[in-house]
Image 1 (spheres, rainbow, N blue to C red):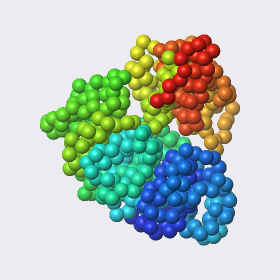
Image 2: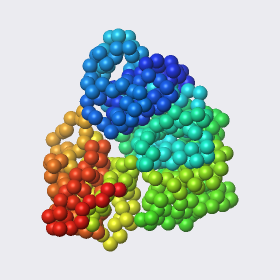
Image 3: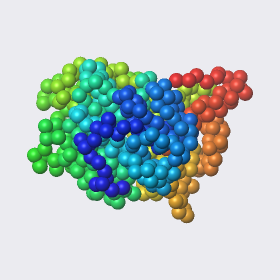
Image 4: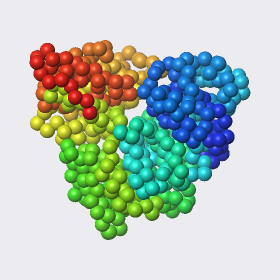
Length: 484
């Protein structure tokens, strides 16, 4: 995608867009953008083919939802917004161009909403949704009332977007299609840089160059935050500092500006001590487990500190952090089996998630139901993904979710399952969705932890797993399922 042709932040305002129509409005990214515009008081419509959970909220805010894709949906519309998932020959895209309407990529519409605000943009190969949520909650706790758009919903809050009254705009910046290069942040946070999206970038060096370009777009009066524990983040910090840019780092590394120590993670959560420039900031606690969660939260603490916000606000917000849906989300318990859902699909985030789930499982076993996300990633990172899946005690593998991709001979999950270093009896490839709950019910024992992990559709499988386990319990006279 040629983002050089996109309209950068600061060129348009949200009000310039007039009546806005979003194609495929039910997805997390598009529904969040719709919610942002609606809470800003702008007229919004959208089209969908499926009744996504987010659509009820859009209607409640006054938005119009068309459950078809057709030219008449554009009647009275000024601006049409599409995502990278929408093909250029989509019927509404063709009609928008025929009518001479303004047509914007999602990132361009989001950039328009940022105009006049101090943007805090969070980027990184993984961890950015959670980090964006944490930064948002810290600013809210400090009374800053930021606007925000997150690529997920904050658990219990049930929203991934809001138009606030404060000067800050917190946004998750997507590097996958280069669209983050049209933003003009006041603060840039980069959680990590690892090999991914190589279908877009070709190699790690080109990906790192794109992150450097993104960081250089930061306002000279603002600052850049990177992770000192991440090799890519460390290289980026060194490059930018050599250019005279204002860069601050966080991590357990001895030379991190915000240094973490005494990090402890358990099933109850994670805690650590933090200091900056030799001065203690005190102890921080999160009710969600995982050392990586502590590391993500440290970037939020550092950002708040550099923005001049009270450290106490960061401490209180993180102590109450409820997590993000599809990020280590507890779905329920059935017949003594605990079920979680986790969005991880990159091998690094998969490994971190499974190590954390092992802490939760204790003496029980860890069963992973995994659906790979994108054929190119599954092919290019097969060895790394297989090694991560090898941390499970049992594996149920579904076919790759790769909408719009053409499968070549030998590609897909059948090849991946052979590469996973588990004995044949402890791993299985199931070709049909309906077989997965049956397979889990056959394998899981009371005391085990089961996690559905990977591509977006697999998030729908958790309830089916609980139902299958509950039915098993019923047949045996055991206990039923409990949600949450």
